Length: 456
Ligand code: UD1
Ligand code: CA
Image (cartoon, rainbow, N blue to C red):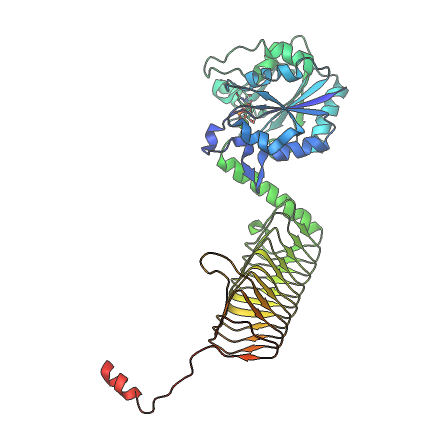
């Protein structure tokens, strides 16, 4: 039997109070709907239709041509949204797995289990439910004296007895596709809200068809996100589960509640991560590296035994045994070699360095190719920008750059050069030279007293 997924994602998400449509809102930098789609792709579902409406182009951009789209021009409720899929799914034989676009935490093994249960029980409609201690905002599952489901009632339409019901609707359903479109047409507008509630399909179907529930044990995975507080709860859940899987794989974390790691990051066993650190994008952290405290590593590779403390590394690479920080900033393809030291208040951008190079304090290196065993003195700067264009600095091996040196690019410093402190170097320096580019010092004998006197 063919299996279809139908994702309801046309709503604005008014309670979010954000510009982005709710189902596109990111959790750990990934849009909510992508979580759902990635799991559907791994499940046994054959084809997916997404109902879009409010800012549909945002969702279409995220999902591309992986899915079929149906358009709900006006958002008149979840029942109305399903009806909008009739032109796409209306004549299909099979079952339809309905999911709300604001429920990103359900994983594909559970999706398949629900589908199997629907088939094995011979249901026409399976409602996925969960039991909640404080079920506010969820529709309640109403059963008759035999325990059979007869209706779903929204919180605001509940009487006092119904409000006490703890079994709630997750908004996930499996339903015989033909029956779905037959019955969804019969749904009437809810008088209080003026919307067509998909939940009303239960009271229409239960007498003539087999309506059953599938109870999910962990209500977190069927949590519907309606506001930014919900986003933070989902984020915490995902963070915990990502961190746990890394820890079980041999990554040590100190105070893991403060550590955020993206889904795509690869972290080898033997890495240590200290508090308040984030590892984002497609970062790779190799064995023995130390990240944090207070480190941000984004789309970067950190090699074996490197250390990143109180620093930012973005779109860059840090070589084996190299230490970065505290308070360093590597960005835009800074490729740092092995055994380097990048110390306090050092910024390196779009540059490469060879082995054993050191930039210990207060240094800017930009658009440079730096060799091995180079020492940058405190306050040295590659002057890469002339106000119009960026220029390149090339520095050979075994170069010593004194404190407060400006290397005005474009410039080439050859191997074994020594540059005197305080020099502003504008010409290339040949191999083995000492470059001094500053005024000679004059000492005026006995002169200081005049100045000291003047001050008095
Ligand atoms: C819905 C259910 C409720 C359930 C809860 C679980 C109804 C009437 N209520 O309530 O029983 O406990 O989910 O989370 O179904 N959408 C559209 N078009 C619309 C309206 C909504 O596509 O016209 C989409 C939204 O984008 C969203 C999903 O449907 O992704 C659910 O809508 P939402 O407004 O969040 O429903 P709830 O009030 O949470
Ligand atoms: Ca919801």
